[in-house]
Image (cartoon, rainbow, N blue to C red; front, side):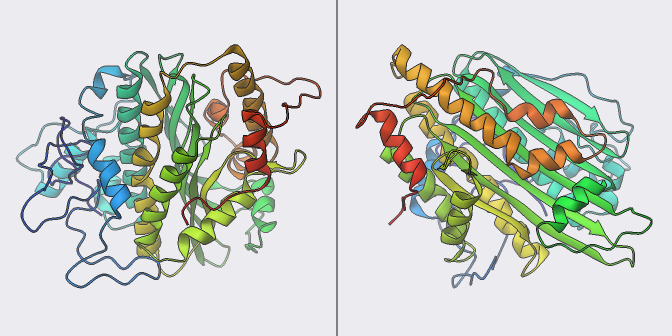
Length: 442
């Protein structure tokens, strides 16, 4: 996989370019004669079939109009983003990205340039990444690092105040991660974008959780070797009229006692508004649908329903938010086709969400509206600690980074005894939607 992106500067459209990474380059509204302006990571992709998707004649699938327009309007976001990123000291690596050397191939220099635009160097040693460029673990690690950098740059530009702290951590059992957190900003109360690349042996509790989902995996001496990597983010704005977003995209490999290897992808993206804004809900869902539709018309409705069912707070009888997409254990039709689908979904995060924050971050609000936001944040905490698979898996995995696992929790939340909103109020309106999910795109 080669996700080479252009230099950070204002422009009217995202453009993929060879030779650099994680950046945006100015591009004319029409792009160029006979060329399609594509989101980051799709340049030179050629014909792309995806999950049950047939490429259009003469090339791969085109972006839908809403997603293309959203991407075009966001090109200037990252222009000054690195001014709001504070890089923590990183563990020195002999294989780090340095200036090109005469003895290094063009491919090696391209990887070094690409990595220089990430929030921190990859968890895996660059020599290992160069050794296995076509391996899915390499492709996925680079994708999650690129996604982390693009989202952090966009958030920092919108906030304009607080800086992201970049916390690189290592796991003694194998692997590590990079947690980027912005707290007490002008716009965001807390925004975290974390990646992890870990390997080792699954704990019995983690294996039990997988078996509960129907995965019968054969262990040897009670051990089950695994590799897992993913990007996870939760963003909590200060303004109660600006929604919270969560996204997560991950890849998993397990090797059984007989040497058989199993792999699968999981992830999704969902929106949690404090107050319902119909226009926002339609924009968010349409953007995700267009990303899914590149790979098959059946994917969005299937994963939208899965999202509504998954983010259900059973003891409250309501959903955590207004949904989005969610999928897990996705292992067909092929690694490459599922990866391309995950790539499209990851690229839809910024255009689906950033316009909503820009629209509402300066809205006026009352103390009562802020109180309602705090009460809804309490519901967010309840779901994450009691039901969320990722949180539970992390807590059950030896050597996990607890601070990074609990990064999703808001700085502030509130619980009040027997609180019930007035009938026909704005608060009651969102509750009705959380109890009875809607179709936002038809």
